[in-house]
Image (tube, rainbow, N blue to C red; front, side, top):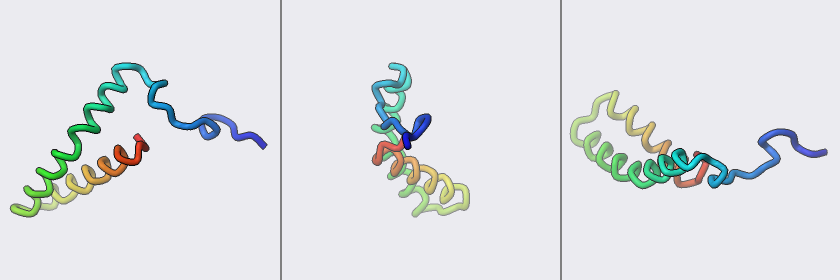
Length: 69
């Protein structure tokens, strides 16, 4: 039985519009330095908001590295 819809196709970033590919590439390059800075900031002055923001950034880093986004 064949899969229907998007599940049957693989992810191909070249099918995205050019502006979205450029934005994705830029975000992929800048997310790790921002996460490191936020981690240092969280170690120095830990607040609940900083910890939540760091977890969100770490999740985004993981998603960009594994090419899920």
